[in-house]
Amino acid sequence: MKEDFIYYLWENKLLSNNLYTVDNEEITIISVGNRNFNSGADFVNARLMIAGTLWAGQVEMHVLASDWYKHNHHEDENYNNVILHVVYECDITTLNIPTLEIKDKFDLSLYYNYHTFMNSKSWIPCENYISGIQSFTLISCLDRMLVEHLENECEDICDSLKNNHYDWEQTFYQRLMRYFGLKVNNDSFDYLSKILPLRLLLRHVDNHIYVESMFFGCAGFLEKDFKEDYPTLLKREFGMLRSKYGLKVMPFSNWKFLRLRPPNFPGIRIAQLAKIIIRNTSMFSKIRDAEVLDDIFQLFDIQLDEYWDTHFHFDKISVKAQKKILGRTAINLIMINAVVPMIFYYGQYHSLDKYKDRAIRFLEQIDAEDNVIIRHFANCGIILQNSFQTQAIMYMYKYYCRRRRCLECRIYSVISKNGDRNG
Image (tube, rainbow, N blue to C red; front, side, top):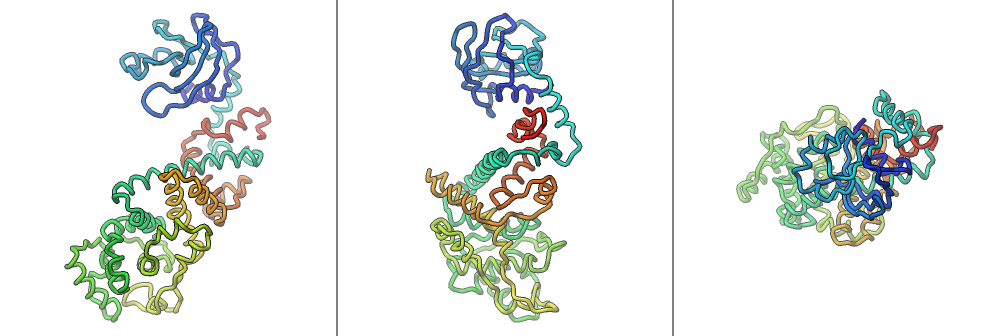
């Protein structure tokens, strides 16, 4: 028996109706309260009738009653307002708190289902049952997962905004940079955004050579001599700007090229970033004010200069000429990871639901992502229609399925409560 299972029984009202304390006092549950993820008892704001008296307060749960002492709750004032101690087995009787023993107060099939899921060797515990879940149950679960995902993203943006002295443009610039280089180079782009502030780039936005030289120079791409005119010019200009502004240079070895398609090489991505910054001043303001998704896509619809048609690296002409543009898939990923969370947090920060609703609407309009997790769910019979759903289910997989947090999942609750396991 685990405490998580006791939480599940309590929160979902799965205990029998005839409940009595170990001292034979009748218990009527008016409200189970709310899970408490901070210090203190497991549930807060519960309302119970015990022996005819209405009580309001906290409920603490353990496998054994003696765990109260093992966890030193008797010495912690955060537990002074506990009105009921719910335990699987009451192995001691010295507590001065009403205690409910539940080992014979629930349907054992619920525990057998739980035990089976926790010990499943399948890709996810419900792999063999999830296809039978009704669509409204799945949609309800995904709605909750997406909101939880966006709220977690908001915490990161909040920290970044504080560090940037509440400069929304700089905060968006850093988030854009982080998610511009694909997962393998996220950390390198993130570091580059911190040593090369947006305000400095915007100061020279009328001179594209200055902007490009600062990007490539700070990224460590200009630390050698070149034969070609373009990188030689960038190196010369960066030398002057580096001296003037005291710019830092990151090690070139930080950048990863292995297993990347050439159009996704860091040098190409840096050139694209420079083009986007030159073209779009006050970028977050434009994104914030855009009510139509295509207006935001236009901000990223760029094509690199002719030099890059024949290059993936400085001083090395590629075999085949190719226009370097940001494809729809790349822009979609920027929208999903950088744009949407920023719009959502802006709405949360200013208590303006229209921005939060807009962010969610944008996700519903972006094509579903395609990756190994999404394909695996498709093999389980779950076909997802848009990025709202793919973002939600990837969050669910990472933070619930892989961690076996089935008891906190609506899908498991429905499967477990139905004897035929068909939701």
